[in-house]
Image (cartoon, rainbow, N blue to C red; front, side, top):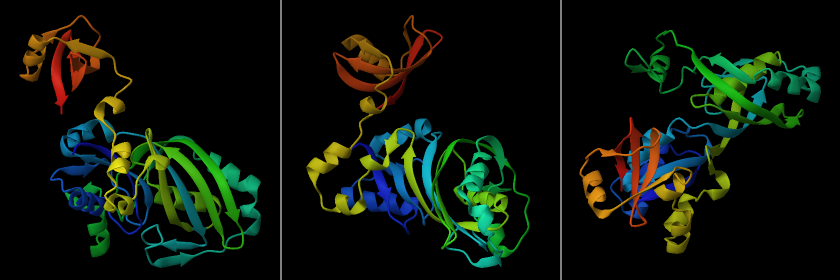
Length: 289
């Protein structure tokens, strides 16, 4: 079995937990994910099955969309609901007016620098940040450039001191940090109480399948959810090879084509082969399934 499955990751599972579970359910040896989703988060997690793991290089830079809930008035050491409370600050009722919250959210639009959380798997000097955190060792965390494309207020719960918002952002954006920064702008502290990833590039939550559905071994459902490479790259131009050129192409021989540089879907006698790259008028094999 080969293809891409969009999994609705359950809460409490690591991304690697999901990969291991899918290998067992589908009885496949090769599978991988295209980007870690926090254990407490739910939502879209693209899983590459079989030789589709080769596609990861084209899928790891994608933009993402989330729905997050901020709990105000409490700061946690991990920045999310799984940590310990390290600080409490009063939440001023006036600061939770819709006008003020909208104004604060809009301040985060565009490119900016963000400092990743200490409880993360980013490596500094060969050591993961959460390892520094657990040992109590101080470390300078390098900033990274991120971009917030849109941010939308969904709800203000003044009684429970919670704010729900939707955000579309670049790869590498930490929503935990964004929640803490929003709380600071509201003159208090806060943490990310919940997180749902609703979109990774064109992969959407409504197209996802749960692990429970997979376990039911519904073949028709699985086939309908499995994304093939020719569908994923349907926007790419096509090159149709004859039998001789197909043989050369599969053997890694460069073929001359007077076409622009870039990726191309490769067919032979209208049967899909994979994708190739043209550079300086030469076509070479990239990913063949």
